[in-house]
Image (cartoon, rainbow, N blue to C red):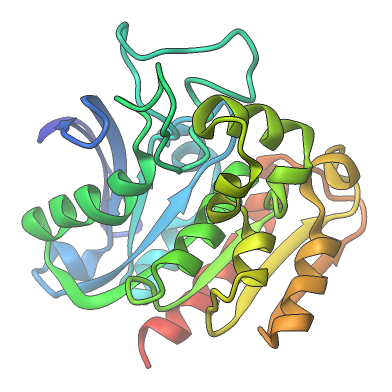
Length: 278
């Protein structure tokens, strides 16, 4: 790994690294906040934040306001990039597919299949890299995210329940195979067969029998993408039918931005901390 940046904050260290990714066949970048406990050599649990469309590792690092809570609880926060990058990586002209819009899945269709293997990167390659270089607590990992990253957190937790102690999301894309953003991206990455999309859709995964212990979701009611793209009602119905405890908190006046995310970031880290220390 190559250290790109380091800054001290709340007794810990905010760092940015780059490294070659075998999963994505390109150089990937991620941010990691090491709380003071980790700097002292104490093994700490990890909490991975997946960002949304058009973002990189930097958006939540600069605007998410997670460091004070992470330092208090002694949690390592990992902020991966949202997609593979580089001149050889295929892209699109639209913002909701291509670079910055991986949907955290493993693409099966050309020209994306070579590089867009973000599920493997997030669930296998990056955790192994983190545990190799930092003092982490064995089997104590959780995941959360925003928008497309909320979709990613929910789907990966449902598909890999042994990897994560808990999962939460801010304004997730809950049912992408029935939203304009998702249908375009899934067509490009996974092909025309809609049955192949179900393993990358939270509502479909729950309908098909995948389970997690419980879910926390915060959603702004002033979110401009609420009705057309996010569909929290579909998630609520799927969880109710499957018996998955869902805490869906809806907030008047809040939009889709990091002003919204930062307002409830502490709540999410507190929620994960409780589950990571059981």
